[in-house]
Image 1 (tube, rainbow, N blue to C red):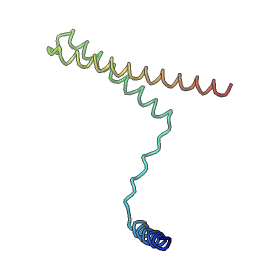
Image 2 (image 1 turned 90 degrees about the horizontal axis):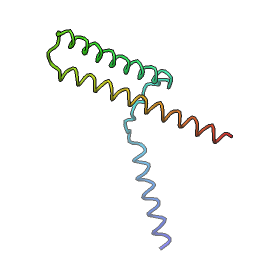
Image 3 (image 1 turned 90 degrees about the vertical axis):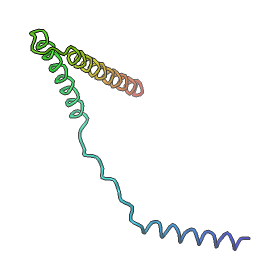
Image 4 (image 1 turned 135 degrees about the vertical axis):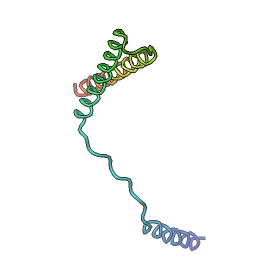
Length: 104
């Protein structure tokens, strides 16, 4: 019985050697971007979305655009993106405060 177990281990180690020899394509690591840069780009994106929505509203009020749906979609997109940004900010502040509590 002990001999059978040793043979099984030897057989499986040969299998694992074969598996290790095969080349498995590795995923490339994502491009490194610092956290501050990521936050800055998110804020800039939200700001741009809000400016675009405000511009569409102004053009609608001037009569240049007759599709109210387009204006409402842009306004809702700006609202949702701003709310998401605020939730991210709130979670970051909450995490920071938790870390500060852990240090105290």
